[in-house]
Image 1 (cartoon, one colour):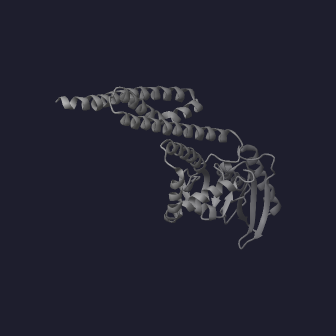
Image 2 (tube, helix red, strand yellow; image 1 turned 90 degrees about the vertical axis):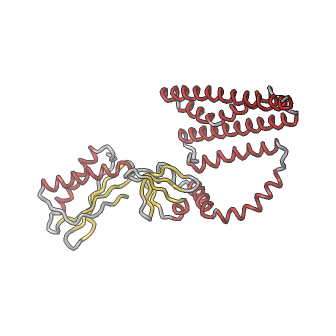
Image 3 (tube, helix red, strand yellow; image 1 turned 180 degrees about the vertical axis):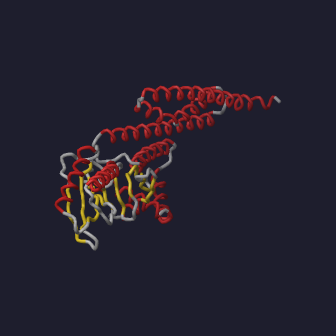
Length: 341
């Protein structure tokens, strides 16, 4: 029985101490995180909330490191085992600090990009590359701390890189296509776009694999970056977000075209003056477009501020035109799907 006492004192007691310290620290951490969340949520402090989220995961490693430190202090382990535990604590601290710095740097860059006019958007792929670079630097510091030479590791990665590149051909294709999309500056989060394959909506994010688009029906469309990079895209927000909205239809051949033009322009002016999404300084355009089989084509065009106003203004314009045509006893035929821009 006495032979087990040294083992009991050197392993069991330190383990109980470490577990107790870690549990206590986890409880304290949970209480602090809970109250800090309520504090930042109620006050609307976005910066403080970002800092809290940045330290949420690293604080777990800090609790474990402190527990291991107390375990070593209460143990009678031989020096070689104490050195192993000390190295483990150091690795935990280096890695956790690296993760905290990466989280803080990413959130700071994201906040700065949203508040400034820099050309680099805070998309998922940019933030991911930024964070991965910092974490890789931290891992290299850990390898250097352990005395592991980095040169042979890089050589091994270079040899295996070809096989990995072949296995992940589609993934890498989407990754580099996403970087190309961002570098070209022709597609940005917030832009309203139309793809030649039919997808339409507002770009919400560009990640390492796909571009996320929110459709006018508020559905999420996920398109691979490689498909976006090779598609023909209409960016409704470049060079500026203003758009031309046209409503096209046909009037009878026997109609008085001067009268039709005057009525249509008056109705369009009413919409321009009253609808919030229109540009009041822009004169509505009324143009006869072609002779058709059953009448003469007519296009009524107004300018809108952005793609978000497109559908509401089209709704108001069609209603205003129909109301005036009914009042003037003027018939229209063959409605054509409206074109924008």
